[in-house]
Length: 219
Length: 263
Image (cartoon, rainbow over all chains, first blue to last red; front, side, top):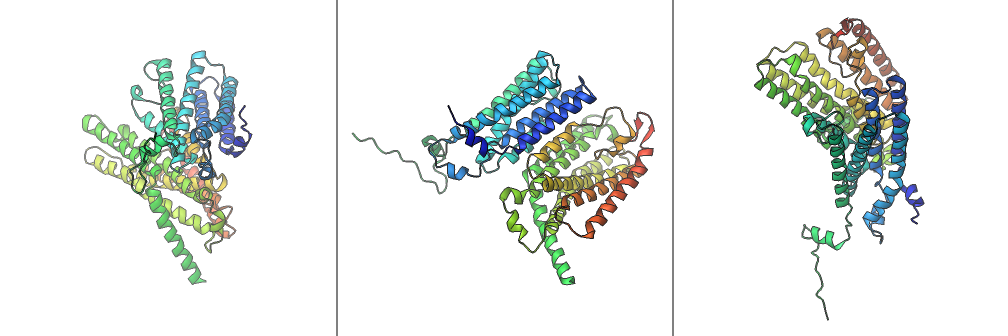
């Protein structure tokens, strides 16, 4: 049993609280003003974007330099943080979807693919930017820019479609899943431990960095 | 007293220069500039390949690009406004002789730089188009409106940074502005939407006044925590009067008939 109590206390919850509040407000307005219309769907999509980008703050840790010397690897520390925040964000998303309903099963599945795709992308960007010193505050602007760029492309080429694309629901689900997968790959790549031998061998040779020398085996 | 005021002005100008350069070269603003240039490029390509292209119908990509640029300028200004909070230097900077209001004034002066640069792609597109197409005279006002829109959204970004110090909020607001549309069926109140581009010189000029009024109100909102003087009250009064008068001039004349508006 992993104790996540201290990890939960170390995470900044303000963005997720704001996202949940705004997401609930969007769905309330959508249910009151225009239930079952495209505008109502936009409100649910907006909630997905809010919740997923809010999780981008999960890796922000002022003590990261100190903790980097601990025996626990970077990937392990990140997994612990994700184990805390992803269930909370996803539960809020599930409540919003059910509360907003009724959706056709295919629509609900497509919206969930969109949420998971954005979640994967946000975590991937957060992984990279946190490692490079940017932190979670950069995640939402980058997701915003990628969605804008995606919407400027012709529908058949949009990787992150918010509206109809050729191929219908299947195509939408595939594209959002691919987006999430790309984000997860970014996350895995950025979660390699800076102290691991493989990482040091990869980064050795740069200016001022010591070469990694493997000691000869002695019998 | 005069020497002190001159020194403060000099410090604000120096801050504006530094922050202006930082904003101009921030990756977020540069991304917006690239997207704005893409909008101009699409328009140029359309005009070159389509003999029936017109400014009124096909220049929407230029407008859309400038709106995206303005939104990203807001996000960049917000990040600049949150610098102290992010770097945990709020207390240190509070101890400086230059007050919060002066530092905010410097940041606002810095926003003027991206506002000026944001006008360039639209102006270039209009000048280039005028050699091939009929470009309406109101376009000059629209170029100015682009700059004022960046100023207004920059002030909004700073107000958000002042009241909700989280890097999450400004991108969310930007995205809300991007996806929310007042409605397909045109109505007079849509003219109050900051991104409306009115199609007559008179209405477009009033819309610029409206945006300037909103800018003043947002500046006061951003400075509400630091300001204790009468200057804030005067600026707020001028802003409210500008917004009220401009809306009174725009709203009754925005629509020729129901659904047929000069937006």
